[in-house]
Amino acid sequence: MPKKLSKIFSSFVKKTLTEKKLNALDDLKLLLLGNDVAVNTADDICVRIAEQFKGERIGRLTSTKNVLLDALEEIIEEILTPEQEIDLLEEIKKKKSKNLPYVIVFLGVNGTGKTTTMAKISHYLKKHGISSVAAAADTFRAGAIEQLSKHMENVGIRVIKHEYKSDPASVAFDAINHARAKKVDVVLVDTAGRQVTDKNLMVELQKIVRVAEPDLKIFIADSLAGNDALFQAKEFGKNIGIDASVLTKFDADASGGAALSITHETKKPIMFVGIGQGYDHLEVFERQKFADNILGKN
Image (cartoon, rainbow, N blue to C red):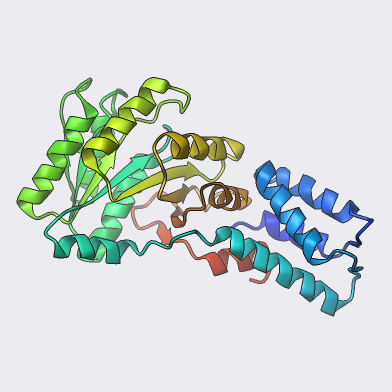
């Protein structure tokens, strides 16, 4: 779990904060910005702290330090708490009870680990007795269909695919029909990951969403991408809509800033984190555990 923010917050609580002297908050904001926390998120954290301790002097006494840590924990947990929780396994069971497949569309730029994450999630579902099929709806990038097919072959999942340059929405449509006919529980739809400023990509993704009518749109973010990941989240959220996120490369030297920033921006839950290259290297994101880690409680 990320440790860099732990050092930032622990150093901050040693400083002095008064209504007129906000040097400690200025330092905190700069440190947050330097560790992948977006400007708006860093501002929000600092404003909330200032509001809670306005007019009070925060010294170095242990009791006061604990009060400040408790305030930081509350702020972080509030940021990480989504507007609506999603119990993936339960939602899939609800659709299954209606004899309908649960449809998930995966969004994210190339290089974030989207295809690998799809295989990890299909493997996770399989371990919970849930069947799935993948739709190779990235018909743009050379090698994308083969890459998805290889990963899904490794975890024993069928892939529905067409030729390159074919209509991505039709691939998703066929995969959903296949799932209905074969009583497959979940359809996992891969999508192209060109630059989020590519208008043609957004039109393409909007069509996929109209045709597939997904139950869940998952944004795949690289934990190490910093503000780039936040920009991607904003663009996908604005043009397509995001229901949840998955953070990849969470085991690498990530500060934890991406988790705070993306949740703060989207108000949607982080569903999983990728912690390695193996198909088992996927963990359900635990807010409390993450908060404890970046506050140095673990």
